[in-house]
Image 1 (cartoon, rainbow, N blue to C red):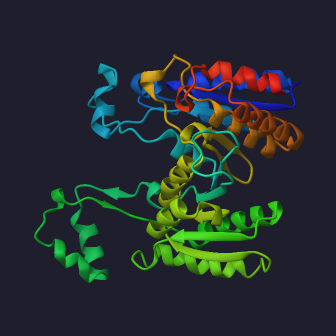
Image 2 (image 1 turned 90 degrees about the vertical axis):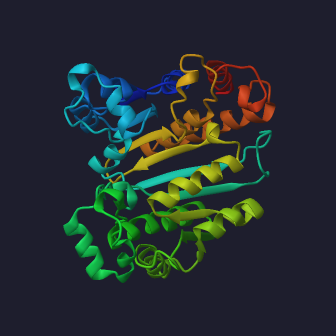
Length: 372
C-alpha cells in the first residue's frame, strides 16, 4: 500500500502538459504515492454544468492532498454559450472550481514563493526571495454580489452610508455591487501563518500590504490585527504598506522584501507582480493550505492555444511539487528537487521558449530528473 494518496487533477489545456512533466520527476524519485485521477475543469462544465463534480469532492476527502494543473474560466455569458444544448437556459452559472475547493476544504492560506534562481535570464534582479501569504477564503472572492441591485439591499447600504445618495438617480439594473468580507479570524490566521513561516525560516521582516486609508474597515481590520499578532514575535519586524505603493517599491527595491501578507484580492494581484520579478508565471508555484488538507497548483492559466504542444515552462509545476513534498513532510526530497531545478536553470542548456530556448515541457522535466 502506498504511503500517500494524491488526488491527480490535470484540469484543462497546458495543465495536462505540466502534470505529465511533474509525473516524470515524481517517478524518478519513486515517490511512494498512489495518484487518484479526479475530474475537474471546462470539459465537465460543458457536459455537466459543473466544473467540480461531487465525485471529485469525494475523492479529495479520501486522499492526503491534491496536485492540480490549470483550468479554463470564462465570463458568465460565454460559459453559458458553451454548455451542451440540453443544459442551456436552465439557470446554470459558472463558478471557479478552485475557489470552491478553497471554501469547501477551508484552504485558508495561499503561499506563493517567488525566488530568483541564478542563471535565469528572465530575473528582474538576482537575489530576490519573496514569499507572499494570501488569505484564501474571504474578501471579494466570497462571491457575495448583486446585479441588478435589489431595493432592499440598496436601502440597507443607504441607511449606513451617506455616499450611497450619489447613486439615487441610477436604477437597480444599472448598479452592480460586490461585498468585501473579511473576518478577524481570517486576518489573524493568515498573519500568524506569515509570522510563523518567517520565524521558522529565519526571516526578519513581515510586510502587511493593504489600503486602509481608503478601504477603512476591511483593510483597517487587517492592519490592526497584524499589529496585535506582531507583538507575539519580538524578533520579527512588522512593516506596513499600501498596495499601490507596494507595487512601485517592489519594482524599485525588490531585495528589501521577504514575507508579504495580505488579503485575497490584493494577494492575487501582488503575487503575479512578484512572479514577474523572478521570470514570470512559468516559475510561480503555490499551495492552498488548510489545517487538514492542501491543494497544490502552479499559478499560471490553462493557455488553451498551447494545449498538447508541450511548449510551456513546467518549472512552476515542478516547484509546486516541491511545496507538496514539504507539506507532506518529505523535506529531504523537497530540498533535492529544488536543487535539481536550480541546477538546470543555472546551466541554461535546456530552456523552454519563454527563456529563449526550444526545449519542450517534457525535455525540461527529464533534465531535472537527470539531476536528481
